[in-house]
Image (cartoon, rainbow, N blue to C red; front, side, top):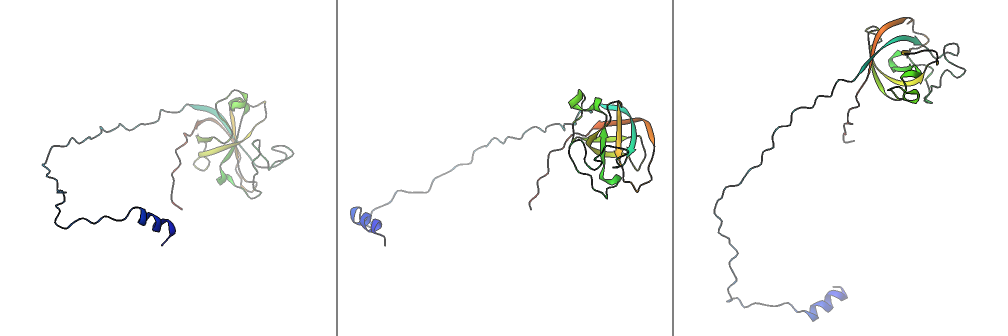
Amino acid sequence: MSIALLVLTFLFPPQVFPTAAALPSTVAHLSPRQVALFVPKPVPAHHPSTLPSYQVTATVYSAQARQTDSEPHITADNSRISRHHSSKHRWMALSRDMLKDWGGKFSYGDSVRVQGISAELDGTYIIHDTMNRRLHRTIDLLVGQHEQIYGKWDKVRISKVEEAEPTWQAS
């Protein structure tokens, strides 16, 4: 027993009630009553508005000094391209007139849906690079050096992919 408990016991001794003393009744008498139940109205599903799309010219490039600059494996946003990359990495370069730094609507790191090239190359890409200032309304898709993909496609549609809220999972 601690000293503090011992002192408290002497200062405030426990009280003993006589057994014959009646204690007040602790049982309450309840009668049923109506309870209002709040049921919220269903919220209509929010469908995102259609994001604007842009018509561009598309080409492909690989990380070679003759197609890029003196550091072909470093992009304009300082991302590093793996030496064994392929078109499955889904990176792209965008002409300067379409980037926010030069008055456009896109930023580095934005996800962009590309449609109108081929089943193999259509899909979602991430902007990591920019193109020469002489090019306008143009995209350049990164492909591997070992892939035999060449071409230029007109009337390709691109649109920014709306970022979804992250899905949290327990680890």
